[in-house]
Image (cartoon, rainbow, N blue to C red):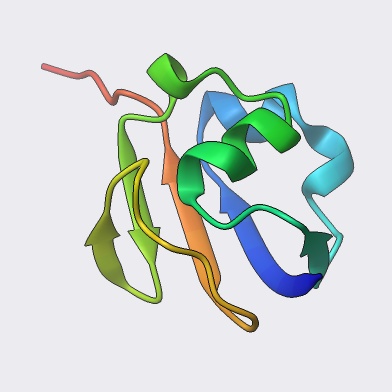
Length: 77
């Protein structure tokens, strides 16, 4: 079991309000993709992911103490 910090942004924050003030979160996931499954965020909704301030992918490994930031597709004009 790992303890990590999850920071959801924009529309994802509103989708999982229960994660807003929970730090650290415990997980059995070994990858970012597994974590998304665990917290019920569709992989297609997570457009930009950072693990410890470095750009990550769904296949990126998760370690105890990691800080994960997840952003949806951002639009603007």
